[in-house]
Image (cartoon, rainbow, N blue to C red; front, top):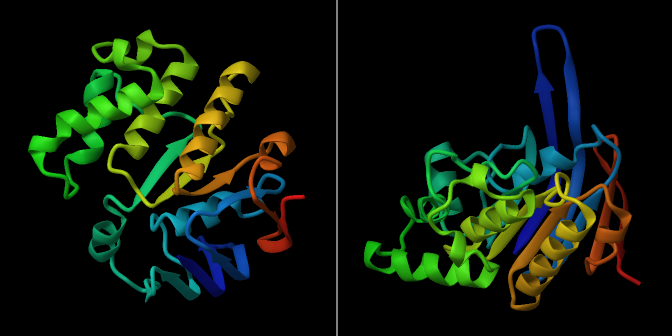
Length: 225
């Protein structure tokens, strides 16, 4: 599904050039569950942003479903990303002026799912995440665990092939975090390719493969025991 070849990412300012990713080679097969770990500043978020087509590499190749997308413009990347990639963020990124239902449906507004199917898709996603009874609530009326369920529902409502999760349990207590991990594991078992950034060794151990970064390089790439 994904292949990175000699991929680097540099961040430049007027005075400083920082290497976020340094000559990364990586392959991710469809249906894999990959955890990305490492200390702060090692390149985890930069790698996830590039995998999600939210940022472009400075050099190297990024092959997504057989196409080298390195160098594509934002319009091309947005078209490819739409409906194919879902995102779950640590900070939830919900819009408080919208209801739970409206937050989830927003993910379908610019995709290719016909408008007549939006209601059924949203209902299915809410039922799947156990939040249908909260459909009319605002995010501020929900617990952290419920907000993350809404964020996951929004991420999967278009049924993406690739789900990217950036510290999805970082703002949750242990019980809520374990529940989110259970949901993500179920989605992977049903065929969704899952790439998750985490600081938790226990959560990383639930993946089928673990990648450890250090200073923008892959230090360890190992299958789960």
